[in-house]
Amino acid sequence: MSDIKTVAVLGAGTMGSGIAHVFARSGFNVLLCDIDQRLVESALTKIRTNLGREAAKGKLAESDVEAALARITTTTDRESLSAAGFAVEAASERFDIKTDIFRALDRILPADAILATNTSSISITKLAAQTTRPAQVIGMHFFNPVPVMQLVEVIRGMATSDATFSTVRDLSVKLGKTPVEVNDAPGFVSNRVLMPLINEAAYAVMEGVATPQAVDEVFKLGMAHPMGPLTLADFIGLDVCVDIMRVLYDGLGNPKYNPCPLLVRMVDAGWLGRKSGKGFYTYE
Ligand code: CAA
Image (cartoon, rainbow, N blue to C red; front, side, top):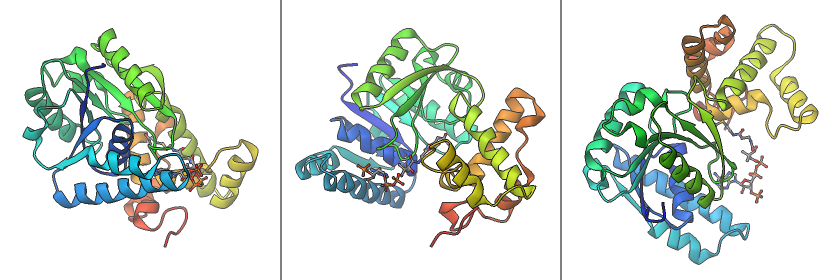
């Protein structure tokens, strides 16, 4: 692991930019790649703002902000990732998109490079099988907002080697995170437990048991959650929540994982949560 100096991050959305942020902050050179130049540029603006927040709180010196930014190179050309000794993919949650990226990384990156995915629900074992190096494929699941959340869920696929696991565990510590090891199963641990909570909260609203505000107050005040489950659902994206429920349903085959009809209707209406301006709450 000591010789990993350059990391490729594929996907410059919320998660990809957060992942690029924490690697650059920890001294790694980062190649941040997406298909559209505007996406990588807006990710860089977001990273600058969030590093600035950390500097304003005294967690970083101003010079560290500039040094971290200088370590990030943006690109739209996957071929330019050949210098990376490690890659984290944080593209859309679609198996076809991830397969395309993993096949390209397998071809372009050095033979000993590890290919990690930030997927929240897709099988690591299946993705690994798309490459010629399944022992070097692993799940490295970060949480939003990545610079703040302590956890990295490290997911072993069926073929993941112990060496790959140790490298990613040590790398997570180097990023200031706490790795937790889990095996490859639908939703891993985080989403297998979190999504049914959100789904049940949506049922409580649909059945008139309580308002979204009341449901969230119960969890904030009664269970010390920083956000209630419906505020969190808006933060994650209701479309993402429905997609993950479907992965749980398809993978585990139990009707309890069926997405709540209210959630499905909201997504059909384009009410996706914070990113669309409306979900259980309205955003400016
Ligand atoms: N970058 C850097 N710092 C950030 C940040 C960002 N993007 N966002 C927030 N912060 C910092 C703030 O500067 C602040 O720092 P201090 O504590 O030093 O003051 C701290 O985080 C708290 O932020 P705020 O004061 O602005 O707001 P808050 O106290 O309401 O906390 C929150 C915001 C951290 C998001 C908190 O509400 C929280 O922890 N919510 C739950 C988030 C959660 O559950 N995330 C997981 C989602 S599931 C997922 O990601 C995976 C999946 O597969 C679906």
